[in-house]
Length: 154
Image (cartoon, rainbow, N blue to C red; front, side, top):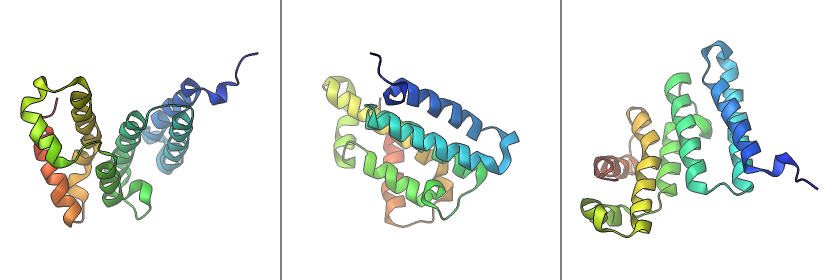
């Protein structure tokens, strides 16, 4: 007996892809937020089905950054740039100090350490997109240090 497709990572990634595509289409107007929310739901279901958290977060954070830049920020967490940056910083697999120590010699690091550095670089990309929209505070200072380091990451 075949498994129901709704339990499959690929099923939910297809739902994610379709909805995130529609979320970015200008002809959908204000409906783009609903498409994006549906895409986020599908991505969460893909995670529940076994998609790794870093991959899910990279996709999730990129769509949120796109929404903030193209549809405008709002006080709801999904499209609040300060909340997005806090979520990104919380998702980073390394401490800033470790990444800064490892970055200059990343080619000599273990595969696991290189992967962690690369995950940091990928997770930080959406933060760079919304940096100009942040309200300030300690998180911004930490983010700026990460963004300065990002160029050195593999």
